[in-house]
Length: 390
Image: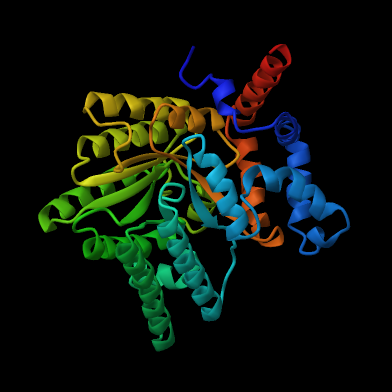
């Protein structure tokens, strides 16, 4: 049997009722028309205040992809997952902040998560934040492109740097690894430079700070190798979450509208190639680089297990982690956990209304990624059938 065809292990944590709900949800997501209609409706500001809408969301898409409204609810889910060898990353999925007060509020929430992670190191080995949670996109873009800035904008950039440093310092003091998510290419340069600054400062003895590489960009493999050479010269450790990426359509549209070369790979095969090459480069140089391989791709996940065997790396070494989103690819996550590999689910939390942008992306992702929904459905149906025959 192929490595990730084990539906029994994948859904061991789900009751018959939860499995049937997941089946119904992925059936709905499999219909592009219904997904588009739901996506459009939930973008309407008052949609979640319509009677029955919130309970329907809570018991379907929200329950499938979100850990809960609060950290307490989320931690309960994380502890349940850890019974099956699967850790979690509590992801504060509230988006769209604009004011300095809101950015400070996000920072305080991340600092709170670091304290929770310190007290639950097995269940919560990482804390993650998005650069845009700490400051405005236009500030990052101006800094990255060396554009003129007003005194007020310079102050806002310093405030962003201070938030980064406060969070990374807290991770360093509490021995909690901090992962910095990726953003759109036009603001990523400034975020990359800040992440590198934090790695230089806090990654001297072990990897505390990890940046993110989106391999749908054609320049990321070269960037990884360039940063490795820099870290070798200056003697500090690197950490990278490696993903395929999440902003492809937006990137292409903007490049065309503003008439600059697209940063995106010419095709999916090129993305897959660079993703797998990045895994091999990092594993080969694991004395210097830590890896979090965020992927729902079964081939890449199995490849990483093979690379670890090739380089005689123990399955539970803290330097190498696998990761998937909560509610997706349980056949990969629970199988790897069952085999003793380090695996963590991204476990979002937040009020239903405020995590709707996240939920919309999850529904769209399952619809647009070739074969994703069909794969989820076939495994769920396989397990439902097995249970009936048991």
